[in-house]
Structures are given as C-alpha cells and as structure tokens.
Image (cartoon, rainbow, N blue to C red):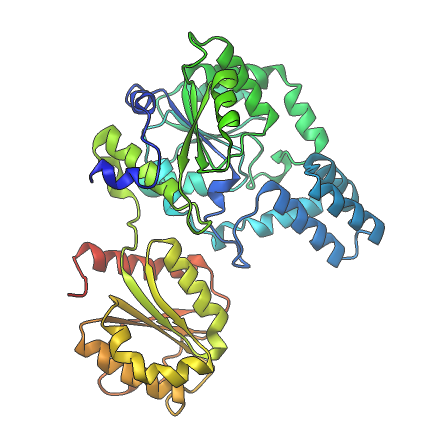
Length: 449
C-alpha cells in the first residue's frame, strides 16, 4: 500500500522503530486504551483505571456496602484523579475478595474477544509485550496469529524473569493477571510495595534501557513505568535522540509537552487523527509499521478489516441489538448506510428500498424469535427487501435474536440467505462466526458491482 495513504492519518513511522524490530530490540508497552476496543458482557468498552474504580463504587453502592457519605467522598476523589486512594478504600470497604469478584465478572474471557488491534500488536516482531492490563486479550491474540503460546509472566514471579531472555517472546503483566486475582495491583499499598521493590526497579531499568519501546493505549502516567523510562533517558548519547515512542491522538498534547517528553524523558510522540473517538488510526499506524518492517507479510494472520458497505434493519423490539451490531461492524471498518428501527423507518423504507440496496454490499436483517413476523408490516418489508437485494446482487444476511428457532417468515419461497442465531443480549463473542463468514466472502473477492 502506498505510504501516502497512511500519511493522511498518522505521523510517519520512525526509522528507529523499524530498525529495533529488525534487530530484535522492539518492546511494546500496552496500556488500558488498547483494551477499550473490546466490549464487556454489558456491551460497554473495557474500562480505564478511573472508570473501573467508578464502576466498583457504583456496584458496591447498589449492594449497600457503602454509606452515602463514603459514596460522595469516593466520587469526589475520582473527579480529582485520586485513584490509588479510592482503590485502597474500596478494598478496605468491600474486601479484596469482593473487588476480585467484580474484576473477574468485568473481564470474563468467555464474553470478550481480542480486537484486530490486539492482533496487529501481537503479530509485530517484538521482543516482548509489557502491559498494565489485567485481561488476557494480548495473550489470546498472540495465540491467534502465531498458533503458539508466549511466555506469560507476572512481576511477582521473580523466579521466572529469566524467561525474558529466551527466544520465545514474552508478555509481562506489570499490574497483575485476572487469571490470578491475588496478583492484581489496584490500591495504594500494593502499588507502593511495587515501587519499593529494588528487583522490580532493576527489571524496568533493564527493559527500558535495552529496548526501543512503542507505547500504545497509555497516558504514560504510571510512576513505575516512568522510572524505567527516566533512567534510560539519562544514559542516551544525545538529548534529542529518542529512546521510545508514544502513540497519541493529534492535539491531545501541546507542543511544549511533546518537546519536554523528548528532551527530558527521551520519548517522541507519534500523532494520529481521531475522527469518531474510536482511535481507529492507531490500527493505521500499526499497519504502516508492519509494511515498513517486512512489507506486511506478518499481517497475513491478522483479521481483515471489514471494508464493505452495509445497511442494517431491525424491528423495534431489537433496537438495542441492532445498534450494537452497527457499532461492532463500524468499529471493524464497515461503512454504514443507515440504522432503521422505528415507525418513521417503516413509513419511508418502502419508498427508498431500491436506492438503499443499490449502494451497499451487505444488508443485515434482524428478526426476533419471540415475534411472528410473517404477518407484520416489518415482515412484509423484509420480503420486499429480500426481493430487491436478490435482484441487485446484494448479500442478504439474517440474524435471529433469541432462541435458535427458524422464524416462519424465512420459510417463505424465494428467500435464500445465510441465517445466524444469537442469544438475547449477545456479545462480541457470539459474532465470531458471523465475522468469519464475512471475511471468507471478502477474501473471495465479493463486492457489489
């Protein structure tokens, strides 16, 4: 792909990053922002640290485990970004077991799917990945693209740190692992103990001094990480020579801040544009980096972008599900031709079916297994939509929400289209089969003329 395509959306790839990747010195430092591309069981983005604490406050409040005065104080502390204080108080009030239970429910692996961004990171020829995240999405993405396990290490496993010297890439979880709740570093005391560990300090100094780090999804405010970065900056040959690189949304950091990061800490900011608050062009930069390293060969195992045009239709009782599907497809690269669910849609759709279908590649139609659609106004529109889609070479896809029972409407003569069954309140994990079907279609070259 032409570099000019990428340059519209991100700063150029620094040659130092390319050289580090080719020489086995690239380190990926991944923060919570990366996991926000994934959704939890409640269809919410996985939370940042502050959001996680806020959710735990609300959860303990709903469980009547916090009195009103404590709730007020904790919310005020969160506004002031006093996260360590809030976390320690939550542990004190609810007990470590209660907080761990909430974390496990939030990061339930069976309900969360690694994003394409995780796979782009995992497929880079990095020596290792250092992350502050509790979830297991990076490890799962690594397995998906490499078909083998990385060395997964925690900072409390000092006896295993030597495995970072092996040839197998590692994932180092700085703040704990949801698979081992007792390892999670959340409150003031556990974080203080981490900072006071001489072994940990030496580890971070070695990692940040001997590698070139690409920092993704991080605000770069963790004191334990900054200590390693600051040490590395004191031994570089020139104050204008960057040791590490930070991906940051364009306009988020002032020119003074960017200059001081480079001169004082050896961190050069790489900016990307962000049009819809989805940070999609983090992926664009990672693709560009892949292209510079090996022409993009390592990306062959990464999930494809869903570059297609889509129209989504759903009855009023499936409105929340339809919007969730639309968000999922858009996040993965699809261009939407519209969301339709309310009475206004039913009134004007008959006049616009021809025009709408002619400008899309896929048309998704939702049905509820709890509703008999055959005799409804929506059902009649679906039949007309199916006819027009067939005549215009548009791929029609049905999604039945609820029980895996084929609606009578789909038995109507003339409707031939794939049908996917998803449960009520379905999550991204329930859409894995749908995504695989679309990827196979797109790789086969399907596209509306």
